[in-house]
Image (cartoon, rainbow, N blue to C red; front, side):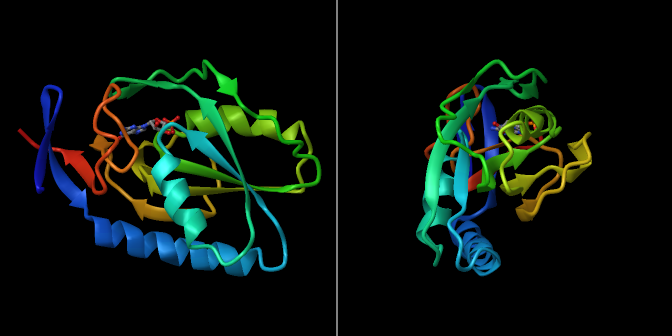
Length: 179
Ligand code: 5GP
């Protein structure tokens, strides 16, 4: 499908399945090589990162530990900038190599607020792997260690990303169509 309708909006395909999958395999190879001989803890940020997480971890050649957390900071098509929930962080992070898995880094507010909280537990290292990065929109000096695609500052849906709860199921990524 080259265009889809989600609620009141039209979206056009931006990254197709093959492109996404091949980039995720490259990211997995890079991570597997960087963490060879170790057992990093992948902390997947729900809800958006669930498909990215599932595909990435299946392409790794190391033995990962995976946990899921939820940090909500987004409503509709605009980031609210405040984290309302941080639930599910049950693993002891002390001394661990942590890799945060994000679907998209937009303003960077979510990670900028969450990382200091994470560091209180004194992990050995924290790196970020994000499938998408809206580089022009990012307002915090975050080091993004693994980035799938740098994308323009336009709203996207699909492959885990939603528009008000809709559109997560697509295996491609769609961008808001220009009117
Ligand atoms: P940030 O805190 O970096 O501004 O935003 C992070 C979160 O906002 C992402 O994990 C994602 O849930 C949501 N988000 C940011 N940009 C988009 C977008 O273009 N589409 C969708 N569906 N969600 C987005």
